[in-house]
Length: 583
Image (cartoon, rainbow, N blue to C red; front, top):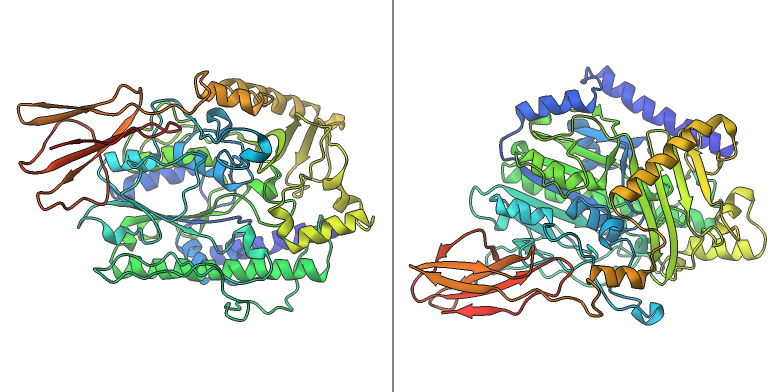
């Protein structure tokens, strides 16, 4: 009953929002293909692209039907842009998801799906390793740099591999488009950590790190470390606010406090976004910049993050196009994180490379057909391993559990720092959870699950045994088998064997060969024996000044007299090469 009331309330709020938009004579909803055609015709040829990326973000904001907190800046972007309610991560946790975003490839196809590949080695007995995608793979930021874009990342990376030095012009707490050359198009990413799961920990307080600062001459803001106290933290929401508690959580003082923190953190994130938007307007760049807002996966609460229910995968996205193209519209097409990289290239008129497993949903090279399915995977989280795969269309989700003898709930120490999680475990031990709240703690799970995500948005009622859905079950089973084969995902492959495969049978991480420098008739040519390696270089001036960013080698160049060349080669997942120098 409670579940039905919650669904009706959210639908009602969302419907009211849509009616308000329509009553203001806004554009009617169009299909992705119709809208994309208009976007192609009206976008600048080389638009700036600005990403606002927040963490652990469900649809808890007014543009997506939740009126608990006000978000003036995100609500403005929604009024002036397009809302995408059907964006899905490839994983319910950040690092595998970010690997998908930055490469355009499924994490489970490149060795990036185990959360964490470089830590928990003492517990797992495994070596530290990074994902190793095919040799032709590049971070999409490097591909944009090769096409003249200034690429800045402020400041989180976390891709399940170390980013090559060729990936960014700058990646640090001060990275900003304002540091580019005059008139240079930019791709700037701002990551906002206020909404991260750790923002629910006690003692509560906002992080001191802020992402809106940048180098300005010799004056550099030095962000603080750690967190503010709760007394120092801005309060955006009354602490006695009433919340719609998900049915898989109990309505307790602890849960209400954690939900208050979650919404308060969202409001702080919105404030930070507003500061960067103000800078964009001050620089006169708003109307030649495509602005994306999205989260790196679903929400931060227990039974959300790390799971491949919609609560862990679905995150809201808003895109504001220059001159408010298609303002106040909703695009309900299915979009996966692997679609971001090819879409970025498509928006700047560059053909996405064949190795990318995603498809562009905007720009010159958008896919002819909208996506029919999204796919997701869950493997190791910190020190605990599970093996789950999922496929979803616009309504139904099929989940295959490769370890049905294991509980869904995994004792992840980091998650157990959340007060709500601690309380859930206590209530479970005391036998005080109802049937819905106890589902997550069952001693084993069904080998297959099928959910109607529209009628059952919390994915509580498994339809596998319901013969009315036999056709849909077979369809999604077949699609999952096709997908696993297409991306060469072997779900039951032991992680140690995965590492051996990534390292071509060796027991240690491969190393990129050092670049060879050849001088001929005044031209410098760089090469590397490691297949697929990128080569970065710097030209040190006569007075010893070293450029901050590594240039990407794309062809022979002149080395000015009296300068020094420094070069290094990189392949994703390999150790970087030795640095070579030439006078």
